[in-house]
Image 1 (cartoon, helix red, strand yellow):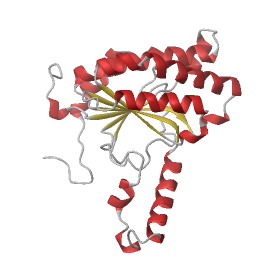
Image 2 (cartoon, rainbow, N blue to C red):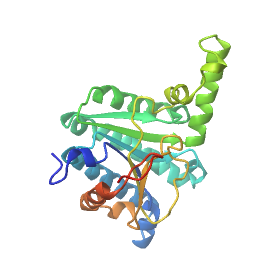
Image 3 (cartoon, rainbow, N blue to C red):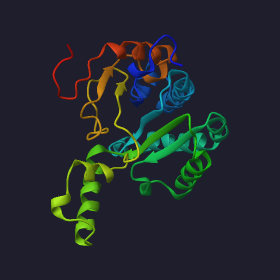
Length: 242
């Protein structure tokens, strides 16, 4: 039960742009890897609190298609963290009935990591309390480009005609086809942009930008943002509520 708030006023699907790990590490005069490690623990705490808030879907931006441009040492550290957590989290996620799904172009990851991510998906499949979608090597433009390619192949193979192309068809070819659009996207660390994340899906999403660096973001910060959510007027293009 969502504490003192009515379930109908809370978001069903929350997405997170977890920004600020590097700055957090710099402030503490530590390597950037230390910031990413602290950020991973923050995510674990947020995942743990989601069921008590009746959040059914949590989607997180773990690694973008543009992040490959970072220093090789940092990229290697991020991949090592993914290896580590894909092993250590299985038991905890299964016990809490959390289903993990990965989206993005995973073909660019090394084989051993792909196998571990695949195992994590298989081991947690069927979790009914929370669906945790992790975007790795993901970009909204790349996702839309691939969806268009898939539709073009379908037309060439005679599965459907050009006249059948509409928003519903495109949505069914997105990586998030099985998810509802996010109700709320939260970005930490002060930047006010979405950085190529869920471009199609966020057409009518509410946004919250906070200055707190991701490793310092607490479950209480999360709850405070959700407590403000009922005051938002979501009209989806319609007139204001009377």
